Length: 375
Image 1 (cartoon, rainbow, N blue to C red):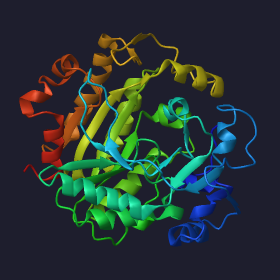
Image 2 (image 1 turned 120 degrees about the vertical axis):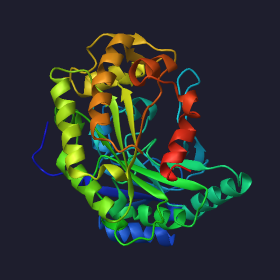
Image 3 (image 1 turned 90 degrees about the vertical axis):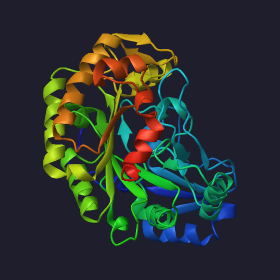
Image 4 (image 1 turned 180 degrees about the vertical axis):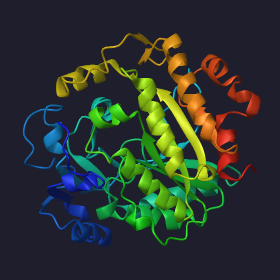
């Protein structure tokens, strides 16, 4: 299952591109096709790409070789779909596409989506206009925005060049910051850009064993941290996400190895936030993932149904995982770095960190202050 080939750039997994007929004459579409240098076919609007056989999710691996360039006919910009039962960081999702060429065993997209191919939206002018409209509608609000909800922010950036468009757009915004979150090491398009501190580059990290066994076609830990260090040299603020934290044999050593290497490679003072979240999943994900990855054992621990109807580790086990990892992170973290939980209760915050978010103004305010230098 694990290849020795480097997957710093998972877009190399693509074999074919499909373009909706109404998009083929767009300048942005032509740019992407030129950079990709792959065979492409033009299909009717709203049609499914041809050449992918079988039913979902059995054809998911095959589908990941195919990229559909089309219009987003819905909203680009919307609130993160958190749940009221757990503390949410209140960021806004910028939906740039669907699906990912990487293939993590625990990826929730396997259960959220029902199409095997990757999708990228090429009506970029509509995307930017929608963001401008949102900013004008709430001039006194500060927006934290992420593109990594339904796809990886940078996995296709070699051919889409979207990061350059977004970074240069965000550099002119005073009331917003963009987080580009990835498991790749695709950063070439970020070099030399005037970003004005309005873009945060973020990497998902995990224990070394989990990264090796459960994160397929992803950059290695060393590749991710080398990319992060380079972005730090270019002046970008950084973030890291330990989510999902996976309970597995040797987990203490695995997370310690990752965190030790993180602080050895990356300047702690440029890390604005680090999130923690234990493995949680929709029941339908276990059915799909165990069928696709029968060698994985991560879904065979003890779980309980949470208030959001997702399976979670029992609270004492989550607390044990969090306390150890939080302690390791605090040892090397800058005083300005915010370490926070993604979708956890006040009880967990109190048990692990000794406070609840409201005591510090709430998670959104904590993160806003971190990225704005404490203001």
